[in-house]
Length: 345
Image 1 (cartoon, rainbow, N blue to C red):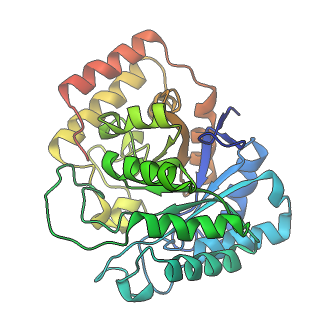
Image 2 (image 1 turned 90 degrees about the vertical axis):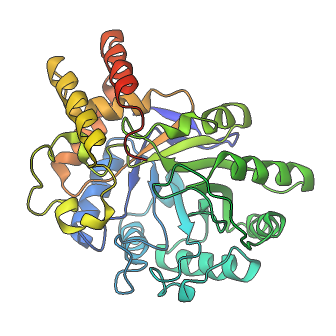
């Protein structure tokens, strides 16, 4: 395994992070335990979850992923050797009404209540990283590239940071991060933190893959200059970059079960995926490993978040850490990107 520093903190996290959004929905408790055991056995020390999970968001499974991790921690021990991250849900009336009636805000009261509930499910006294799952603001996230100006009302960033700072002082959080955030939002959080002497953001968890390199426009420089690296989620585009969805949608697959989550199968994305898969196979590489190895190699990246529903796929994905792409493969990737730039935001 390889490790990188989490922001400017003292924490060293594995470049492979184990995601948990399928636990409690596609994967049961026993399967999640097997995934955790496999990943930890290969040197993974970074686990990511959220109060929202499992996905898709439902009242019946809300918090299930955290609860499973908590049960695993109680059974296996070793909390101190792990870097555990979770997220507080933002507003979402109509689709997460089961979480604070969908009107969740990043206020002092909400952040404290959400964190306490997550800690109870995780059976731990603290989180190493606590992230705002998506902005309160009406901005471009969850598949939207363009920003449309609107009149909106959101909790002042200073109030949010002050509330998080109190939780840091109490030892319940070690560090804070953002997710699904823009360059403006990230810089605003950093500026307010520096101005008021409050905790700085140490990471940004955003989508990033061969099919969506929008992070490189603006946010990559922020990560580099401000010490808040990317935690890349959906590095395989919901599994599309494995090639298994080309010309078919396998039974039992995520996109068969949850077609509403598919943002990676438009005409341009399919054409790009086919080109990436063909490139990998022409060089004797597994398509998933090539896509992940490319993510792992990015200089602004801290960790690549992997999620898998089977142990065999998880093993293949973890093994990507040992793959160094040749210059010829990288040139091939860049050539495809020129032909099909960011086809799946």
